[in-house]
Image (cartoon, rainbow, N blue to C red; front, side):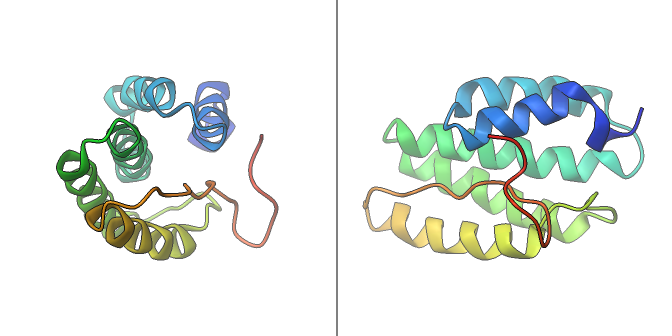
Length: 121
């Protein structure tokens, strides 16, 4: 089964988009340990963004920024984005890092398919 069709991956995206960052992170972590070939970096991006969002929401600014920096590095290594808009996500992450560093409340982006609506909830 392709990663983008895996119900667990789709559920984790939906959890992230619903603001359930801890649960999304757990789901992405499970998928990360099963990922192969070009799936690894895409799952790593989603895992790091989820964990970064969780840390930011719990007031842990430094770990949040560190995880988001890891997500940016992983985005550069993705060779198959499976239709997800990583260009937009990269820009969103950079803006969020500025907000987190400034101690402001952030509005988390949704993970989206390129040229389409938000994937799942």
